[in-house]
Image (cartoon, rainbow, N blue to C red):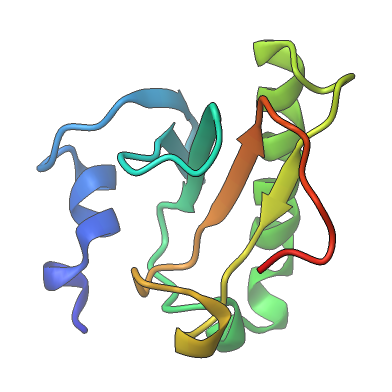
Length: 116
């Protein structure tokens, strides 16, 4: 899929409306339109990377940033102390449906392990 056809690239560019939660120069976070928990936020890098499998050492700072932003949002939204789940689905068998790397931040209910 090209970046021109990427759903998340269009959301980050503002071409498709979204429920913005957070943004900075490296990423954009918004409410998932098909939530799997009472709180379900997607944190998307502005840089298009197809999946975690396609990232390399050059993106290590960006990957860490996505996780730190997840924790920051959890604290700001008030659910950090109760707990939350951070998930990165990778490729088809991993459950990835939009091929633009993204982090799922889920909260508001207990989660079980192992998932899925």
